[in-house]
Length: 251
Ligand code: FPP
Image 1 (tube, rainbow, N blue to C red):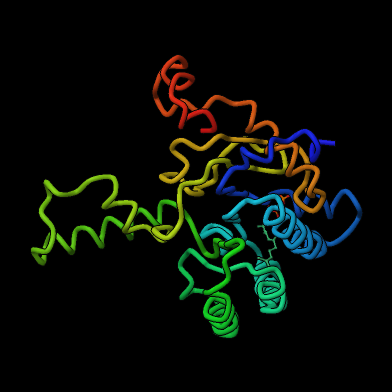
Image 2 (spheres, helix red, strand yellow):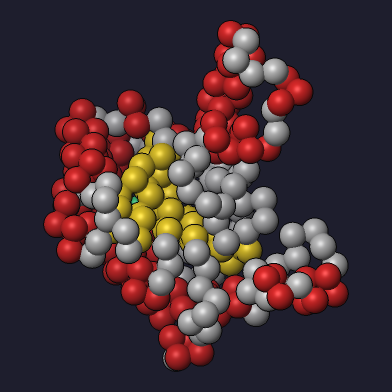
């Protein structure tokens, strides 16, 4: 059991997840793709609660990409109504989890936007964990928007070009309120980042597994955390530098 093997003093602060494989999970069971998404939503609930109990402060999941708008209408509408149903404030209040969203949310149906804002506002004071859901999100969209914001500050004279640093970009992104992910998990066997948190994952540890998202659970999460704990995070330094710096022991 990986749950017993993991070091409770070296839990990643922020885990980002690409929840992939709902469709293939459904197909393998002779079910409709929509049933894969329903099972995926249940897995998200269970993983969010498990992560929070393990001490993971931030979980950020890719639920709907900018590119997903191109899927058949039936699937898009099904995902939107699933989202509407699953945005249940009691889940966030019962687990003391703050709910946040990143992405081009103005494109979402109005009822989803309303419920989403209600959950964001009601759960804003919750402190045990933060679940951020990426909806109508893509990294290239987010970075383009950040560039526009920075350019307009330069144009209006409130920012000089020489003052622009990587922190300026951090602060202009949707994720300004989040630390960078320590660990990025992708389920479903594909080995790519699919336009997800490209800037923020510059130094994240990457973990890919074949498990389809609906089958991902607490034990699978612990397995990913265990793999993360076997890595040496060097942030560009040498192995010797990292092991000689006490504060880096757990990075
Ligand atoms: C990718 O699997 C998954 C999605 C596009 C949707 C993910 C959504 C959920 C898990 C439900 C989220 C619910 C809430 C409440 C946020 P895929 O369909 O691309 O799988 P495939 O690659 O096997 O076809």
